[in-house]
Amino acid sequence: MYCQSSRNFPSLVPGYGLCGLTEQTATTVSDFMTRKFETIQEADSVKQAAKKMKDNDISSLVVVDRHSNPIGLVTERDIVRKVFVIEE
Image 1 (cartoon, helix red, strand yellow):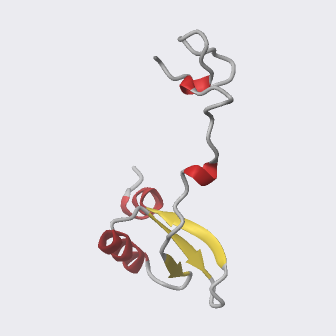
Image 2 (cartoon, rainbow, N blue to C red; image 1 turned 90 degrees about the vertical axis):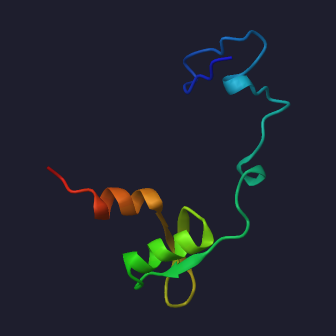
């Protein structure tokens, strides 16, 4: 089966919904989400974030303020695209 990424294109397998999921077998985000996550302070360095990701074998960190309230997310992709990629 070929998975379509848009509602405008039907599945190539009759009887299946988007990506082979029917309403009965569709799952929610909570079925996939990570319940245990690592955080990093907003004032910490990019180097600290990269090291924490490497040490914990993860690809994202929840960024928290000084009161430990979540304020954002930083990912490996963010670091690669915004820090290590030199624009031509």
